[in-house]
Image (cartoon, rainbow over all chains, first blue to last red; front, side, top):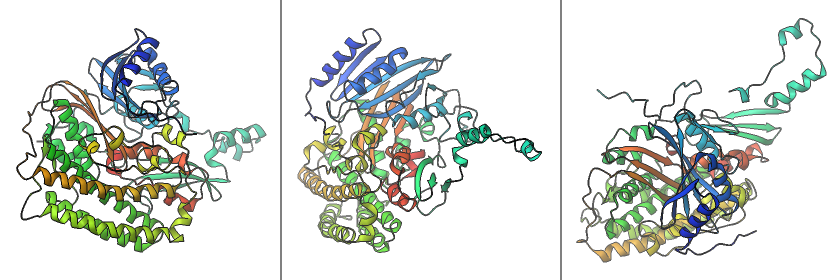
Length: 160
Length: 403
């Protein structure tokens, strides 16, 4: 039942970096590493496979967040994925660019149940569609809302 | 959305004499699980004694057994993250206090920590220890408020009164530290707002007294609850969730440690000076409501231990040591994230800065937002009477959930 828990070693980050870059050569690059942090820039076509690889092969059990960022020229989805056992305390940040004219990305809710609501939230606030999501409905805003309020094109009313 | 709609048979045609075929009945039953006569959706909230705050829990009950649950949040959605994009960094500090009213200091601390990491500065040693003390005081008062709420949920008013009474001492410590009880506005980017060595407040003297008092009174609370079958019989063995499922659903904090996930950000991914204080992380493997209760009680004992050590370190550093740095108002372009062990779980902030004095994007990861999304797994198979107990063990806080 209990999985092997390992003590922190400063070689972990380079180990993860090597594994990711050899598996997804050209499609995912590790932009930088810090203590317990690995920053990955991934192509949209392999984002789901990368997440699946992290979960199944490297034991990343916990998806902390799915974040949407509106960069005006394009959108981004950022995942933060934590490890509890094999690389205890390590967080992998996966950054995926999405073009404005095709706001679709594969959902990871089937891999981590914890990503479910984060994806719903990102969809309702940014309009990024998560394909194969079990239930992509509005969560925080009213059901009849017709715009995506966290986009940069949505301006707040100024205080007089 | 189309997924939730169920097709109701053409009732007018049936009333006019159209034949009702078996296929129609089967199709109706298959599509409208919500309308089966043996199952009933019960809507608890938004105004309901068990919901601490404004949210709704829809539960599907088959007789007395819960078969499905659907939490609805968002009543308190203020667009916090969007508001933050239109404010300068120091102006976000009081706003961060309002994310969680029970432990406001943790979010302010987290925000300041994220900005400091983005700026690449190291805060003074004394400020780090003061923040540890402040965080642990907030953890204690948050856990005590949870205990008071559990007391009323489980029908024991004494627990409510005793826990509230103990919480007042820690509230007083908040006042001594920064002048406010709840929305403290105390940490600053680069340190903390004011020093703790003040003759008029005598913060450190009273902090030790408070710790000594709490060492005794926590056992009063534990004895009150552990020897009381009103509590234990309702907590033991209900709301069980496995370790794997818990990790997959993203449940963090005391609820996760109750299922055997041996992970505490303070120890496993240390921030500030948590790696220089000695404490234990309580972990239980049963995964029921009682385990979550036990973990929180043990955490309170450990918090007092941390406070004592950190206070000694502050005393050793003395009055002359700096507690705050001057920092530039603009943060260079880049991306940063920080994690912090909130009383309720793992909270996190993700900052995209563009070189100006306002954040480009600031995302808050709230532990409760994820924990409450797993209500279906926690509640499935329990009785309706157990719903308040199981949900109380999540320790709802709507300010951070809805943001």
